[in-house]
Image 1: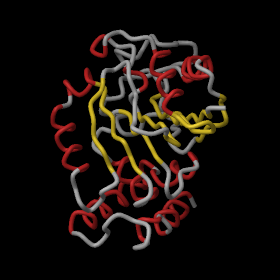
Image 2: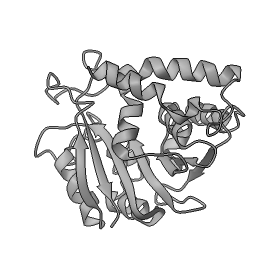
Image 3: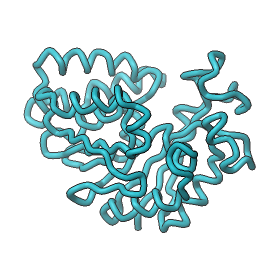
Image 4: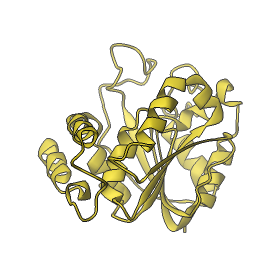
Length: 245
């Protein structure tokens, strides 16, 4: 049933509507769409975007956007009247030069036209306009790690709060660590205790409004690094939704 639900959402994404979407008939657009639709079964992009409440015309910050799957998913939904600001934290960008280059190429792709790419200090998160959604997937746990500058996550949470419109959403996806572990495993297993995230984000003024278990995996015992072959791409992940009052 989940697969049918996801496929149904894919079929109704505004990108398929010529009146709202970026250019949808180019080779690059069709290639990206085919690849991303295949990925949806595992990553549930359209369903998670629906959980976030994303709609045509919305403005989005995709913080540390990686390979661009989430950006492309959001760009198809928000359409020509919306925008996705892909923001790389500078220390992360220094470690991911190939991903940053490919993302810059994505932002320049005329198949979209509603994507921007930038690199900012890790302590900043700024778009040219207030946004409806700040999103990050599998990167929140990195913020306090040494390569990022051993930063206090409160800085990121406050920056996300400032970037959002009143009523805007901060959506966080990350790998689950053992209950009670706090930040202990962020630099070793690349996991974080969901309770620690909830405490940090609500301390910045956000309201916790719900979670989705679309990426949950009860078979993951939270003891292995996320790159371990036995669990890679199948980790237990939490999806937390916060709202700026």
